[in-house]
Amino acid sequence: VQLQASGGGLVQTGGSLRLSCAASGRTFSSYNMGWFRQAPGKEREFVAAISWNGGSTSTADSVKGRFTISRDNAKNTAYLQMNSLKPEDTAVYYCAADPIPYLSIRDKVNVYDYWGQGTQVTVSS
Image (cartoon, rainbow, N blue to C red; front, side, top):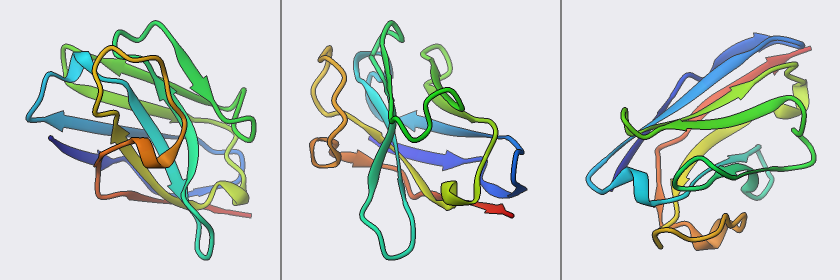
């Protein structure tokens, strides 16, 4: 499977961005999707995940109420809407696909086998 993340950029504190993750090469609608981020000098961390059918989502406490994950299975694309951005949200954002179909949402980095190339999000103060 190939994942292509896009939509990152430079934004001021309080601004918004929408990340997209386009998937190809497998049955997108069968697999959970996740967003993770990695800031300089820090480990990659969970941001949000969505179930294969979009019926369930999970969001990290640090972004709850500000970030929303969604997906459009007809377009083989997952999204991360980021509002009220803060400087501490600055990181490279990665989308990932869970390798096991029809599973409950998982939030651990090491269970995701397929990763996009990352897109940089920078929030200026």
